[in-house]
Image (cartoon, protein in one colour):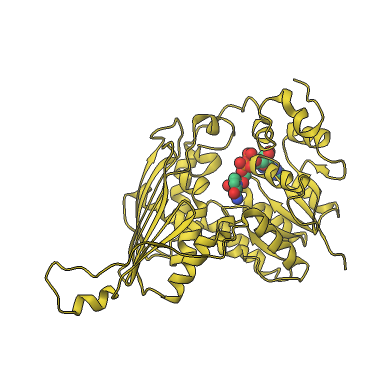
Length: 407
Ligand SMILES: NC(=O)c1ccc[n+]([C@@H]2O[C@H](COP(=O)([O-])OP(=O)(O)OC[C@H]3O[C@@H](n4cnc5c(N)ncnc54)[C@H](O)[C@@H]3O)[C@@H](O)[C@H]2O)c1
């Protein structure tokens, strides 16, 4: 058996080109061999043929690439709504698959994808939840699950560091509209945090959410989100996100029975109570007296944060039968369910109970999709790809590839 995996890529856009750059710069281990790319855009294919190493074959459809015998495994990096369809194609061709985040845009299509995955237990289906590799979230999850500081009482997560200007929305013909991205901040930027939330704290029972649609950008979908997530045990969380705030912060505060924990700037801070609060409540002390809190300390972690490389290498190792740390692609359903619940609440102005009815959500979503206005074609489809390679100006392509691009 060979000691490497021949990998194909479906979708050579902004994110797909990141994986290609990692590969051509040899920032991923040699067991990962990029052998083919499929993209429906003729401009992208021409660029691939002209600029990328000639041993990477180029196809005009996923189907053609999957039937070619050139790939054992495939990364799906097409627009979100296409992920389930592409994953199903891969599985039906007997190809291992890595789905980029999010798993899809609505519950029904992700459930269908998972049903097909269930029929192929021999294939490694994984999902690009790269932020799960971050040591601070892994350590926080461990603390929550072991109840080292008791139960979680409140969670407040403000994720305002996903700033996006109009240049971003204008660079893609599918982003910013219902009939393209099927959502904004929550489905495009925040799937990472929505997944981390359910991965660390579990699924809430009820969700209430307000969204601002096109509040600060000329887009159909949301750029402002405030959600309240309620758990049966009384824990209440708030999740706030905006793509409109330059220098916005990403701060997660978790209040537990025995400590307050904050994640900020990729560091984990602990404020431990000398006595867990439930015990203090019952003690004898002054009426306004609070438990003594120890000075804030940084929690030590293993310091590892491998991101996309770590997720890809775990997937390849599992395909080769050399490790079992790859995540299961079917786990993508939970964050799609949670984000759909946020939309459902914002659309209907009601508190939503989980698990959410996939058909009811689909019908609500389609009301927006049916009146969505198409965008004009983008002026420079290769712009995002050039940016990935650090060459904004077409004249500067030579700097990266040593080849000049006609302007
Ligand atoms: N994991 C991460 O950190 C991360 C970061 C950014 C984006 N993403 C995800 O990557 C996905 C793509 O985003 P992007 O910014 O690269 O978009 P993009 O528009 O730049 O790229 C999508 C590419 O897919 C191609 N495509 C569309 N339909 C296709 C099909 N049926 N078959 C083959 N090719 C097809 C398009 O031509 C385009 O080149 C999104 O789902 C996004 O959420 C993940």
